[in-house]
Figure 1 (tube, rainbow, N blue to C red):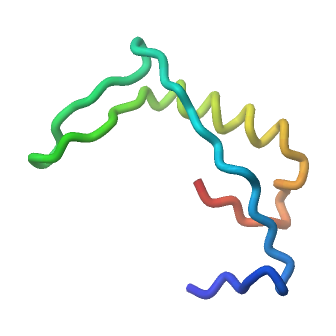
Figure 2 (figure 1 turned 180 degrees about the vertical axis):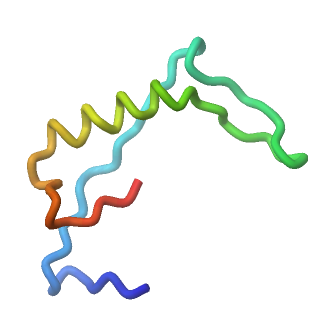
Length: 65
């Protein structure tokens, strides 16, 4: 899939770093690999808040998380 480039009006927002509290995530093993496991409801709340705080993300765009 080609998403274009900066000359095509693509805006890149700063990275979002989440410091997940221990009660919402931990390390685990999935398919013999160590992975970060995060509570889906916690992650959904964080993404929803991020979307609400960044009005440049709208239905005419294509956010990738």
